[in-house]
Image (cartoon, rainbow, N blue to C red; front, side, top):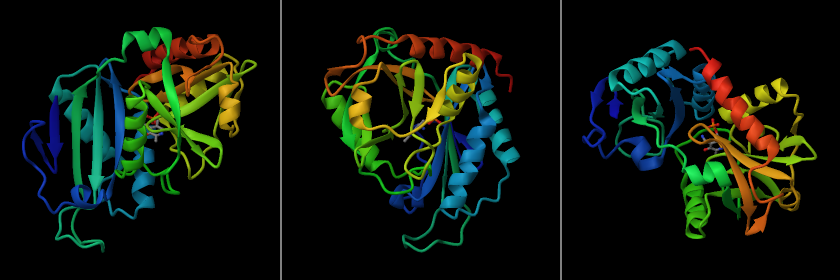
Length: 280
Ligand code: PMP
C-alpha cells in the first residue's frame, strides 16, 4: 500500500497535509475510486471522464490532462507492486489560509493504492441486508464530491442495525445507496433510476448496462418507489469495490425468495467475464 501527494510518494501514515488545506477544512474537492484487476485498471477512461466532469461542476482549475492522470495512476500502481487493488484519487482546491472564496493556488492531488479487501464470502453467497433511509443529501449528487457526511451517517445507521447498506429515498422514490447504485428485477427486467442530479453515474452501473445487452436482459432506466422495491423479485447494488452485491432483505422484509436471484447471479458471473476481457 502506498500514498502520493503533490509530486511525492509517501507511506500511508506519513504526515502530508497542512491544516489549512481545503479538502481538510471544507471538503472542497472531488475523488474517484478505481479498481485494478490483475494489474490492469478497469474502465479507467470512464472514471477519468467522470473526474473531469466533477471538477468542472465545482469549478476546479485543473491544469492536468486526462493523460497526466492516467500516467500518474499507472505509475502509482507499478510502484505499489499490487495486482488486485483500488486506487483512491482526490483533488482539492489546494492549500491556502481558510476563507470560503476560491484561493489562487494550485490544486492538491493525492492518491492511495491499497490492496483490495474482498467482500465477505457469506454476503457473496447469501446476499446482504439493507435499510431504507431518507436521502438527506444536496441536489448535486452527480458530483463525486468529498462531502460525504449524509452518506456516512446513513451507512452507520445501517451498520448499527446489522445491515450492509442504506438505500436512500427521496420523495418516496429510490435514488441510490450511500456508496452504490440500486437495481431491482421485476419479471425478468432490470430497473434502475435514470441518471439525474440526484444520483452518481456509477461506472459499475455502466458496466451492468453493457452486460445486460450481452445476456438480453432489458435495462430499464426508470425510477421506482420504496414500495415497488419491497415487491421486487430481486434487488442488488453495485459499486467499484464490491461489484454486484445481492440484497435479500430490505427493512427486515424478504425480497423475492430471500436469496441471490437468477438475474443477479447471471449478471455477477458475466461481470467477472467482462472484467477478465477488459484490456487496458
Ligand atoms: N453512488 C454513490 C453515492 C457512490 O458513492 C458510488 C461509489 N463510488 C456509486 C454510486 C457507485 O459508483 P461506481 O460504480 O462508479 O463505484
